[in-house]
Length: 272
Length: 343
Image 1 (cartoon, rainbow over the protein chains, first blue to last red):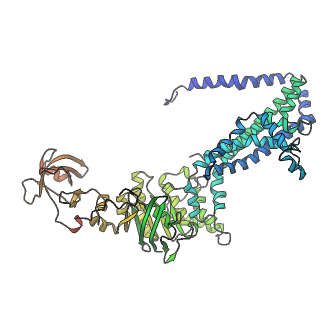
Image 2 (image 1 turned 180 degrees about the vertical axis):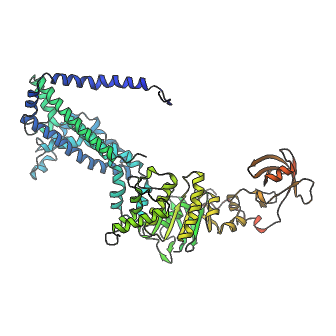
Image 3 (image 1 turned 180 degrees about the horizontal axis):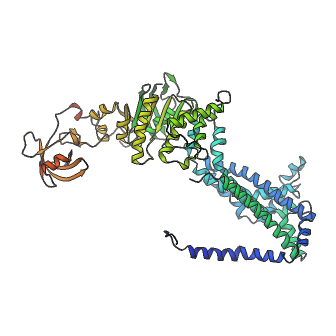
């Protein structure tokens, strides 16, 4: 017995959704797994535990997590500045946040590389301090931070805009100082949005290719990320191996994102 | 703790919110700030709370003789209750109430046990025992407002300030909570100031009513006094329905006696143009037979209307009460709005 709703069309809309998801996501993924299934469990194990794959996985997931974490901090600060203060150029700054979304990632990668290379604008000073960015894992992290932080800004910003000023006034009149008000009243209300931002930045970073391959230098065992490793397998016509690595990467990513979602559900007291 | 407000000015840009406002709130009183929106009542309350500061050099706010004009909100010892509760929705009811105690500096913060006891005591006081583990979104509007009140009281404020405390509640809850607040105030005797735009609420609840208009105080006094003897035409009109007679007198609808046109003592005869019976009260609009085009509102009992067998179109006689001084209030000047920049 279907309940009457104001807007009908459940069947139709679900049908379109499933068809679309199948065409765009499910069928390609299934094809990937079918290709990977061409190899037996022993081959899977051998490929996925090879030192090169493990090193690349460690770098990809590690640098992505680190980049997403830093994006959360910088993104929170940026959103705060954009929401809380009015200053000349605020609108321009606001628009600039979206640039990493629009910029071709290869352009970002080449630009970052030339700036952070040992003889680049910033790289030369860092070099003097003994810090190497380009062609090191740090460089990977820099590129991933660049593409990740807009996700945090754009998820936190609207939540922050909706925070009632009254909450801060209530805290202030109850004797809380500014830091306490931020720590105990404002920040907890932003946590769900920050986790969403982290998840988006993290997911994006895991799959990122274009901006990283230039700045990392792609040294196997050192600065090679999983997507690059997959491409290099393809270039050697090892299609099954590439599919196995991609499948493994997908499974791990899915498990991680699922865990984050669970955590968020748990924290989601915001139901009204 | 008495509150003394001395010639406060407050401007936002070129908008004047308060224009030389002075007010004495005696210790232990329940005072209503009553006025239409934009009259400055909320700004005045927020200045007393320290959430807003008066224009520099303009005036002072004293708590029991002590100048608190420059003291920030958190150090004034005021409890502030917001119209929309402003509860911390990520915290339980108990944590909300305890907030003001848990943010105290470590040296003066009570032990956890003491805080828990205080929270329990407050929950009992606002009649919300057993709801300590709930979150604000699980409570009704009236319950939320009482949590907000308990939270404000937790810090043992010297003054309690309420900004339209019943504004977001529906009619029945509003009435109940209003009575409860009056009782509550009588029990704990805390100096209380509340803002409202509802004259009935102000008249029913307060010991003293401050009527505000256009950034100034129009009249201050006990509810009955203000209702019976409004000093200005604005107060007359704001505190309830009133007829403005052709001779400039103000007469409330219930003060007019309804008679047959031919009866002795009739001041004015007119035709009933509307007749509306609401429960025991009958409201009539009477169009005078003399040249005046100004309808007169009359409230009578339903019994009387039934007895006289009145219906729309009938001619009735009206008898006005004897002239009192207050029936000719000082006309509220048209040009006293500080924000009216036209000449």
